[in-house]
Image (cartoon, rainbow, N blue to C red; front, side, top):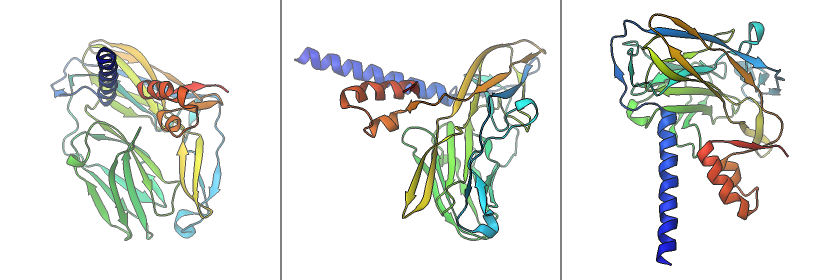
Length: 310
């Protein structure tokens, strides 16, 4: 009996260490060191959509004069040749390189009941200022993206021009944050990548990106884009209070950076097939028999997501 308990404890500890290790790798390389990069290379490319996206328009139902009568739920935007705007391309696990631009301030605005910019990058250890440019009440709710969604900031901004600041000490770790509005504007959202190094780029109107001053070496390049399809609508007394979206799209590619030479990596963003998407949060809600749920929750926690086509 004691041996069996010890084995179970050992397996649990190993699983926990693997999970923690995965989270550390996702957040970035700890202890990034800024150096003078004189012989760096670069990488550029384009993120393109494979397929098409149908825009879903819904009535705002509140503050129409400021927000407009309707709003597009999909935050997806494409330009020439199917280029995808607002994807983040970044290098994983880079220990040293160029510094962040000095003295830069980071601002998230609320204008016409939309967050602007919709996607941004914030250096880890920097404060983030949030302003309400609308003459209506907004309630800024910023949480960590992923399992648990730990809250970082939840504050009302009823006055036009009101400003609030997320101090650097409030952001626990690198990763992704999501901003929403809990004041009757459920379509409002923004994504903030908290980055430990400056080797990132947000794609432009046509899906193009460029990252420069990269020390020579081999790296893993990642493309990230928020989920597009609405998977759940939460209502209260007949009013929509929250939209939930599918999990983000993530694609990786191995690259080799040579001294003073450009590299090119393009990403094709393929939309997921219709099916049942399992994540640890949905599995824990009881959608599967208990005998299956434990294994599936473990797999979802370790792998972020896996899909089963029904």
